[in-house]
Length: 318
Image (cartoon, rainbow, N blue to C red; front, side, top):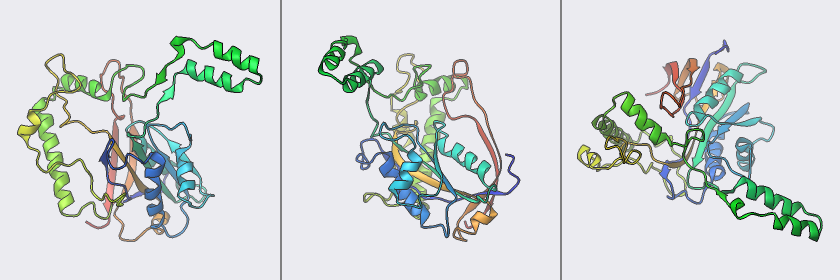
């Protein structure tokens, strides 16, 4: 990180996280993002210098999601906004991008975040069918339209149904992670124990109100839906593998894997000057450096977020 000024990350806000086809099923990425961005904007005294927003799953109705969110939230239209994407690290790389832009040309405060609506994933037309339909619509005369209509072949009638898979390997994150677990000798029990501890920690945090000032109640929902109070190691151990069902060595189950989620979250990225525009009691952490790396998914088997390493110092309340 070449920026010599101190960069701080300030605690942000988010929606609750819920499952696919759950209570946020009527909200697309735009509708999930707006309440978070609006609530974040009320925390800043003075102008936000720019915003970075991202999502992995795109939408045919808009390309620059960040700009659309900003307009939909009815915020200051002269604030620059741009969309970013880096798969599971989208919001984190947005933070790094913002960190590199701050401290220059008077920029000191950025709003960064991301969203995913795994429920509202659009199904598109196959490329040949899309091309055919475009030619039909663009035809200027009846004869041209009739000619275009006749060019449709049965093999062209295909829909593009997005899948949670990597394009070049044709395999899902879960399938790649099965390879990783086998290569690194991460056993089923270890994964189940980690999942159990995750559930217990999340439930304990909910009970002591840890998330109460971080979550924006949305559509009557104010808590995450995934933490299970009644789960046990015995229950987790009875679940069958979902990504490797054939080899008899699969270890990833619905209980120890990440769920498909609907939700949005944001964070502040600021210089020392930018912090003065935020509430003085807001917890913050200083970003002193960052590094990203990549893996070869063909030989290393891992299909996850790039390796990330960061160093930080904390300032703020407990």
